[in-house]
Image (cartoon, rainbow, N blue to C red; front, side, top):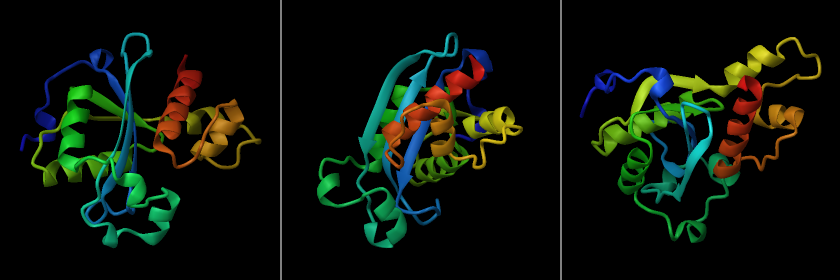
Length: 185
């Protein structure tokens, strides 16, 4: 498996952003599994959305999932009957946004799960070792705003008037992208 730092040398201003949100069966990347992926491919030149990606992923070991996490993401075998294998989902995602930079609300979690999944599936990394954390941008913007008490996706979405259905990855990632645009453009 290629080393993450062996990625093609592409300037950050020329690298597409991949806004990504994952839902998992728990919070431990070594134990739990990715079961949902939502992503937006964003042009590095004008920050416009080029395309979107969404899939549910078949959990191999749902019995090891954290019951609270499974409840939060509304997991049920019936609702996942059209899900695809993890290997297929990762290949499709890598083809969707090769040589990208991962972006998200607290994208370190996605980074950890993607790294673990790519290693498990023996697939190459398709993203840069740099991350764009939108929560950090919100921290800097709202630090001195007394009306903001919590640095959560829900609270910042509400503050900026952005629609959000929490723990629905497609809604989460679209809200994150909208927050990003409002904070930097």
